[in-house]
Amino acid sequence: MSELDKARAEAALARKRVLATAHEVQGRLKPKRIAEDAVEGVKRKSESIAGDAVEAVKSRPVVAGAAAASVAALLGVGIFSRFRHKSEKDER
Image 1 (cartoon, helix red, strand yellow):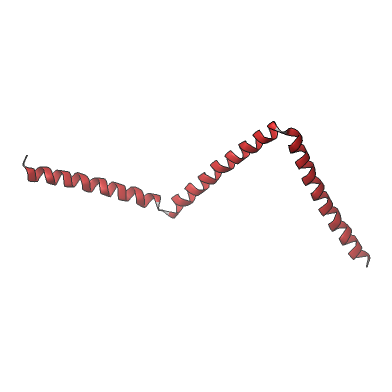
Image 2 (tube, helix red, strand yellow; image 1 turned 30 degrees about the vertical axis):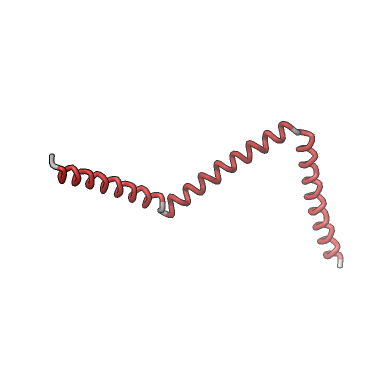
């Protein structure tokens, strides 16, 4: 095989690799693929955050209970004030 034939073979192989890379990049840039990757990333991050939250609750159950009670109390006050405000409005 001559030097020219070797160079042509190497060029053909390089061309195939470049085209394969271009096709792979093209596939990665499709909007559907980008959206799927983003959704998968959000799922992984959500699972990580949920796992961290579970560990935090397990390590500090009293603090977690107090936080949950505080949130429930704030929601209760908000709901109560809405009903109270609505009933006062209806009486007028």
